Image 1 (cartoon, rainbow, N blue to C red):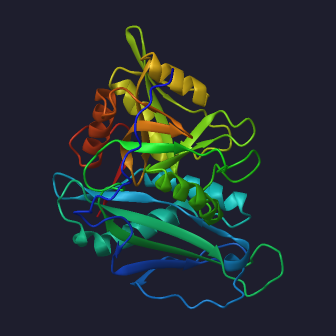
Image 2: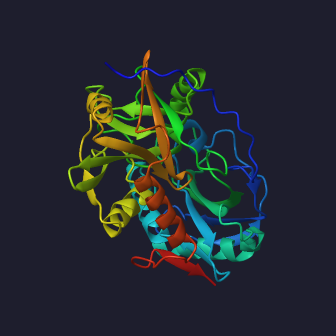
Length: 356
């Protein structure tokens, strides 16, 4: 029988730090596509309101993509962005999917250099805080014709952030969504476009109403394969005899290929674990938690970094993962990743790009 536990109290903890997304910094970087073959040089200016025509194509037809990455203050006081080249490549993939011009990697990196150099002084040496960078691109044509825009604008803004779930790392509870799907085959689940996110809000409201922190998505076809948690990738720690496996759902075209996800697969090997990518069903997750094979589950992403999952609710059923607390592998992976961010552990392969 599935272990039954009472529903947790909905998250109400007050934030002690800057939160996430509220404390925007002082500057904005902007560049424009000429409609034919090139982008203007990125320019740094004050953070200010935009003036948009009501018929802007991006507003009506969703030609909007974005990214999310962070810069961190390292132990020696310098600032460095985490794997910006990977984020540039994912931004380009999102642009291709929405029939938008690709932003060259050099321009992406130049924009980050300009903004972090200008606003990085606002980031303290508190290791729980970071500078979150938000690249954005949208179609700018004044037209209600159902077509791709010709003109585009790129923006880069930033804000000081603490932890996505607060400044302390506590296990979160999750609600399995049976009513909604995040993505479907042939859709846009593997890119970061604005249109992916508003449709997920109803499921998140359901999770909150059920006393959970986040929603877990199942595949849209069979409704049995575990895919993501909210906007984050999921991992499962499986004890297989003497071997510890760190497992994440396979990329099927409906999951976002997270940069943090990719990084943790590499870091798991450094800890002596075996990284694996495989499809995991909801029933398998439940049964392997029950018999102790899956002892830990965690979510990861740029905003959340590494966040342990302590409890799962599926309708009227619920179960704990391990003892409901953060497990040792989750802790070690989070600690190692954060140490790389702050220059306290060796940089595996040039992941940190110093901002001069």
